[in-house]
Image (tube, rainbow, N blue to C red; front, side, top):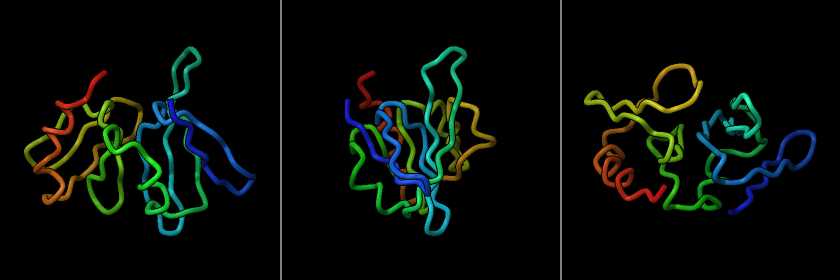
Length: 116
Protein backbone atom coordinates (compact mmCIF):
# COMPACT_ATOMS: atom_id res chain seq x y z
CA UNK A 1 0.00 0.00 0.00
CA UNK A 2 1.53 3.27 -1.15
CA UNK A 3 1.16 6.49 0.84
CA UNK A 4 0.61 9.83 -0.89
CA UNK A 5 1.66 13.11 0.71
CA UNK A 6 -0.94 15.84 0.33
CA UNK A 7 0.65 19.28 0.77
CA UNK A 8 -1.91 21.58 2.38
CA UNK A 9 -1.64 25.05 3.85
CA UNK A 10 -1.02 23.46 7.28
CA UNK A 11 1.71 21.02 6.18
CA UNK A 12 1.75 17.50 4.78
CA UNK A 13 -1.11 15.05 5.25
CA UNK A 14 -0.40 11.39 4.39
CA UNK A 15 -3.11 9.06 3.04
CA UNK A 16 -3.09 5.56 1.61
CA UNK A 17 -3.45 5.66 -2.16
CA UNK A 18 -6.13 2.94 -1.91
CA UNK A 19 -8.33 5.38 0.03
CA UNK A 20 -8.22 8.11 -2.65
CA UNK A 21 -11.45 8.24 -4.64
CA UNK A 22 -11.06 11.29 -6.85
CA UNK A 23 -8.73 14.19 -7.57
CA UNK A 24 -10.31 17.38 -8.90
CA UNK A 25 -8.19 20.14 -10.39
CA UNK A 26 -9.13 23.65 -9.33
CA UNK A 27 -6.61 26.05 -10.85
CA UNK A 28 -3.39 25.89 -8.84
CA UNK A 29 -5.08 23.70 -6.22
CA UNK A 30 -6.35 20.11 -6.17
CA UNK A 31 -9.34 18.82 -4.23
CA UNK A 32 -8.62 15.27 -3.11
CA UNK A 33 -11.54 13.14 -1.95
CA UNK A 34 -10.51 10.36 0.44
CA UNK A 35 -12.61 7.54 1.89
CA UNK A 36 -12.27 7.36 5.67
CA UNK A 37 -12.25 3.86 7.18
CA UNK A 38 -14.03 4.69 10.42
CA UNK A 39 -17.66 3.70 10.84
CA UNK A 40 -19.75 5.17 9.41
CA UNK A 41 -17.63 5.43 6.27
CA UNK A 42 -17.42 8.99 5.02
CA UNK A 43 -15.56 11.01 2.45
CA UNK A 44 -13.16 13.77 3.45
CA UNK A 45 -12.01 16.51 1.09
CA UNK A 46 -8.45 17.82 1.30
CA UNK A 47 -7.38 20.93 -0.57
CA UNK A 48 -3.81 20.51 -1.77
CA UNK A 49 -1.78 23.59 -2.64
CA UNK A 50 -0.45 22.00 -5.86
CA UNK A 51 -2.12 21.61 -9.28
CA UNK A 52 -3.50 18.32 -10.55
CA UNK A 53 -0.47 17.73 -12.79
CA UNK A 54 1.70 17.45 -9.65
CA UNK A 55 -0.20 14.34 -8.48
CA UNK A 56 -0.60 12.48 -11.80
CA UNK A 57 2.92 10.96 -11.88
CA UNK A 58 2.74 10.09 -8.17
CA UNK A 59 -0.33 7.84 -8.49
CA UNK A 60 -0.34 4.16 -9.41
CA UNK A 61 -1.30 4.08 -13.07
CA UNK A 62 -3.14 0.77 -12.76
CA UNK A 63 -5.52 2.18 -10.13
CA UNK A 64 -6.11 5.72 -11.44
CA UNK A 65 -6.88 7.31 -14.76
CA UNK A 66 -7.45 10.82 -15.99
CA UNK A 67 -10.93 11.21 -17.47
CA UNK A 68 -10.67 14.84 -18.52
CA UNK A 69 -8.52 17.88 -17.90
CA UNK A 70 -10.09 18.43 -14.48
CA UNK A 71 -10.42 14.92 -12.96
CA UNK A 72 -8.36 11.85 -12.10
CA UNK A 73 -10.52 9.00 -10.78
CA UNK A 74 -9.80 5.81 -8.88
CA UNK A 75 -11.07 3.09 -11.21
CA UNK A 76 -12.27 0.93 -8.33
CA UNK A 77 -14.90 3.52 -7.39
CA UNK A 78 -16.41 3.89 -10.88
CA UNK A 79 -19.82 2.20 -10.99
CA UNK A 80 -21.14 3.31 -14.41
CA UNK A 81 -19.88 4.78 -17.67
CA UNK A 82 -22.84 6.30 -19.46
CA UNK A 83 -23.30 6.80 -23.21
CA UNK A 84 -23.18 10.57 -22.91
CA UNK A 85 -19.58 10.38 -21.64
CA UNK A 86 -20.26 10.67 -17.94
CA UNK A 87 -18.92 8.57 -15.08
CA UNK A 88 -20.87 7.71 -11.94
CA UNK A 89 -18.73 7.28 -8.83
CA UNK A 90 -19.52 5.14 -5.78
CA UNK A 91 -19.29 7.72 -2.98
CA UNK A 92 -21.04 10.86 -1.79
CA UNK A 93 -19.64 13.19 -4.47
CA UNK A 94 -22.42 15.44 -5.72
CA UNK A 95 -23.29 14.67 -9.35
CA UNK A 96 -21.50 12.82 -12.11
CA UNK A 97 -18.21 13.50 -13.87
CA UNK A 98 -18.00 14.39 -17.56
CA UNK A 99 -15.46 12.31 -19.45
CA UNK A 100 -13.63 13.74 -22.44
CA UNK A 101 -14.37 11.66 -25.56
CA UNK A 102 -10.65 11.08 -26.09
CA UNK A 103 -10.33 9.56 -22.60
CA UNK A 104 -13.60 7.60 -22.76
CA UNK A 105 -12.45 5.09 -25.39
CA UNK A 106 -10.22 3.08 -23.04
CA UNK A 107 -12.13 3.62 -19.80
CA UNK A 108 -14.25 0.41 -19.82
CA UNK A 109 -11.16 -1.69 -20.57
CA UNK A 110 -9.23 -0.10 -17.71
CA UNK A 111 -12.09 -0.74 -15.29
CA UNK A 112 -12.34 -4.40 -16.31
CA UNK A 113 -8.60 -4.88 -15.71
CA UNK A 114 -9.00 -3.89 -12.06
CA UNK A 115 -8.03 -6.57 -9.56
CA UNK A 116 -10.10 -5.88 -6.47
